[in-house]
Length: 437
Image 1 (cartoon, one colour):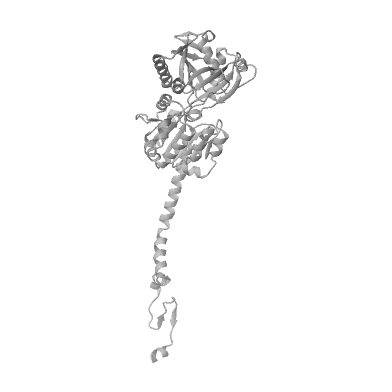
Image 2: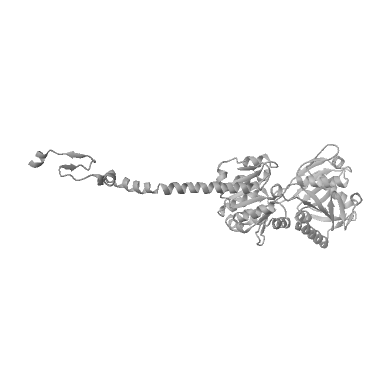
């Protein structure tokens, strides 16, 4: 649906498509497919944990049990129904809770035993979420999940054989390598940690956490995205992916989509966006194919930088955080089925079926309309040019010259008549009067 008529013409002039990854390029249906506790990776298939080809009893592994508990507590999902089959919440948190339920964790009972006291959401410069819970023994539990690098940086211990051990540099390197391996498989990876507290206050600075492990989630790509990117490239439209994922994950997805058109894929992280001067950023964005670890403010900055570089920019999105960028873009495209009310309200075009392939048809028709407008203007100017050439000099020299050139040749000289050039009529003169003179 086109909400603003001017968007039809703008579609034909689009030069850059900024594509939000989650929910736009992907289906936003997360599923945990890989877990790593300590330095041991496990694959997850249909709720079954597999290590070296053999299934693992989750409830017999204290590290896995603690990880399942923390991801279930550090969550804003709501379980609907006693059978725990319906979960309401974000796709990422829903996938984590589903993993815990499939592993045998009674999430409802767990949350009753560890009620949530306070929640601290992710924010600028703090890419992880923390929740404070009271525990049955009278103490308190701090549950943390978020960017693997950031969570690992504030962790000093890890679980090994059910006991807390000091995080050595070797173990840290193994965790980092496992994170890069998961991200290289185009997975969204989260780090999980916890801390036992004696106070009911949320600590201002988070540190001395106990590292539990990594959870890697796959989000299926929408059908036909690779072909769609190729179509845009052949039409001369550059495609740019914007995502909150870490660089390795973003790079893997960018390669799958072929965003660089066979050239080296350039990835820019949000840290560079904050430190660069706007004028310098406008010169650099033309060579960037993927923006990683991006916040809502960064999306707006990216759109404006592309516009400052002289591009007509289209932005796609579906979430509340996409609203500012959708509004600032030359044309905002929102998902109609899965998109939020905010995204639809500020956009120029709404895709009712969430099918990004519809934009190919829209751009094609927009270009047709734009070309028809140009042809019409060219026709009108060329056909009326002769009138312009005649009227312009006549308006400058006076109407008398118009009469001379248009009617003067039809007048014949008659010695009995005198012509009055004030008009085109012949004025008769008395012959006797003419003889006297």
